[in-house]
Length: 423
Image (cartoon, rainbow, N blue to C red):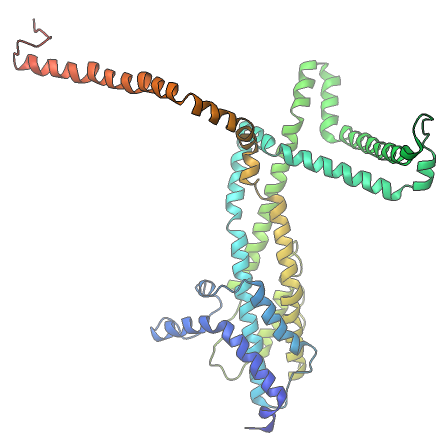
């Protein structure tokens, strides 16, 4: 054993390798069990079963791996003097890469499969006018909140851009108003003026929209009040239809992007052997470059870009691999997750509470009154149910089913008590 193997630097490298190996140990044990049963001899990253062996898509696990890689990224911990330490550092890169692939695949699967439910929901809503009407009603509170928030932001922006001193001095205060209320009066009129300007500007934008232009064109060309009213009333439904189609298209695009990245993670990666003692860094460096391009932006997935060549020296190979892996863990993958979550939050189907807000509101408003009325008249309700449902059902069954059957049987037996006579 060389002296470098006993140095403090070597001890730190061994500790970092041990920490990573513990994270991946359940997967190694699973693969060893398969190897003993004769199923496989290598750890294949294209095998979908490895995605079920571990749950690595956790912030704590990714942060732990990122902190380990951070120790190597500045090059201070990299050791290229000892062959064993070089191979150990390569194994650290490979294990970090495997954890990254599994965690990314789990995250993509978790956020891709549920998209089918949202897409089926949008398809069912768009398939009928009734569905669009229900969606318009369900999203009415949210749309009202969005309008209020938009007006508030517009008023807030106007207030920030306005010259407060000049604006307040331009407001005339009534002589009968007490001095202590002058400031309140001026600020109230200022905000009301901003709100009025925002309402006017937003109304003008609405009137300039293509939908309003279509309504105006129909009104002028056909001169039909009925057609104009129908088109005006249909404006909310047109908005809902446009919104539904836009959200569906964005979810389809997100699904396609996720599937492409899953294809890269599960199909285009080579097989690593755990017992390989001569690790070639060129394919590993190429994989890291591809992953860096794949997760740099949600909207783009272009692997046709010329990849950076693998550095010739061992030190540069290790240093670049550690830096890019740490960037993936620390910046690119979290940023990609944030972009996906933002897309899902904006474009997913309404929550169950939003879908049933009208029913919930009616229950809150009238539920207690109805419950108290039912409790106060429970005996009357019970008697009504007993008379009109229970006794009626029993009487119908007895008089129209049981008794006629008994009379038929008595007639067949020539019973004198039979009420049916055979002529």
